Image 1 (tube, rainbow, N blue to C red):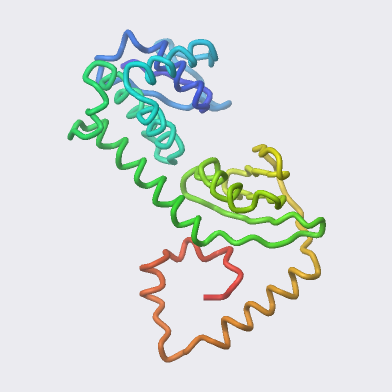
Image 2 (cartoon, rainbow, N blue to C red):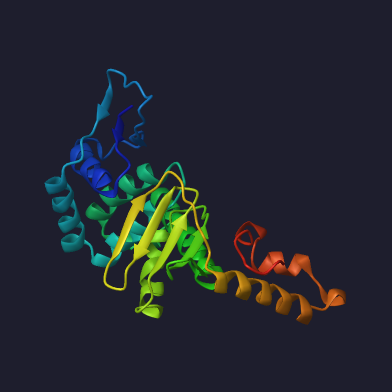
Length: 243
């Protein structure tokens, strides 16, 4: 059974698509992110990311399929599902042969891709409504999230459009990844730990907001089950208000 191991980057996965083309008809083809502790077997293939090969695959997908198909693959790649790499590669090979309409079929790999894309976009949608910013000492607006999927890259455009003149940072605590926007450009990098000091105004406004929410709530009409149905409890953790 062909086993291809790569570094976990999107360019790395595109390189796998280029390298593994000869095994495209093998349904047992498996793609896995390699780790430092992993010892490869004799039949395992270690794929080194090649940016020129990645660009060739990207161009082929856009030329023979569409930019929209590539976008779907990128979105699927943000999933935390352990099988995402394998189903993406199989779906790309099938689409290059049969056309991008395969995404509207019941093909097992394409169906899986669509399911993961939907999960990622649904989680992004939840965070667009629930993400809260707090002001730190230097005036930067800061927010912490712990998404199940890696939605941080696809959250940014929304908040850049809404907060063009504000410096802000969004920290994905689960992946130790932070995106920082300085009003001109955005950068994403990894951090081991963070120490945040809130501004005096933020501390005051946060307490005022909690007091306001508490004062307008009607205990007799409280419906935790409905709240969790509208917004799963998993996403409550970093809300300023106590619900």
